[in-house]
Amino acid sequence: MLLDGFPALSADNADVKWDAIPLDQIDHVEEIKRAGSALYGTGALGGIINVITRNPSNTPETRARLLAGIYSDPVHPEWEWSSKKRLFENLDVSHSATDGKLGYILGLGQKWINGFKENGWHKRYKGYGKMRYAFRPTSNLTTTLYWAVDDHGVFV
Image (cartoon, rainbow, N blue to C red; front, side, top):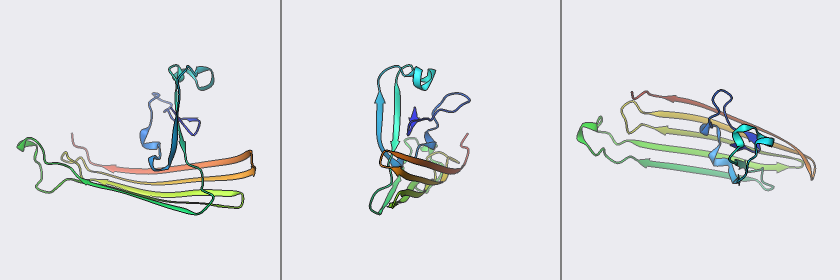
């Protein structure tokens, strides 16, 4: 698993940290169906998935995404732990532009779920930044920063 061509596996047990992939910034996904262990290590024996994030736009562009919903009522009455409806919401906002040789994307997001299980609530705040400096049309330097903080209950 790669993110913009760099390994997205954890060093301790080689699992993918799915929360570290900025879903609202994905441009496309590449799949390489062959062994790639010579280039990417032993984790690439069966192939590679490369998630490519979008690049800064040439014209100023602001994006907003809002997701919201209500969980259905539990099937069994004994699973009902609250008379309130269980909700979720997600808001992502980003801005992208290019000024001369420097392009950037800045994004903020927030997710809130009050949980379909008792004490299963979850809050997440995140920030994303990508800067790209073009030295020449074929040579550039790109830096990416992704920050997130989670707070959640424990339903067990």
